[in-house]
Length: 117
Image (cartoon, rainbow, N blue to C red; front, side, top):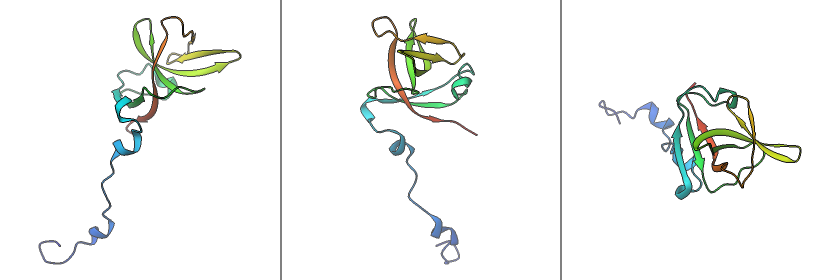
């Protein structure tokens, strides 16, 4: 009720609070959030200020977004199957073959991107 003693008409529209964490985190012990800085990943649909939800327990599939360690740096990439090999598509449009025996390591699969519109 409001100060006049009458129920507020808005109370008919109240719902439980939305818990975004509940909807985007399936494996809490292996999931983390990372904020993107810069516009170097716009070709991947990721922009400055976006928040990535990354799950380290999930294996990437064709067309998955991932965080990969390339040359000692964590980089956002898309995993693609091209003919008989797997490659990483980087935010600048370049491709890099994945060889699991070298220093290319998939660090986690991006499960959600949160960004302002």
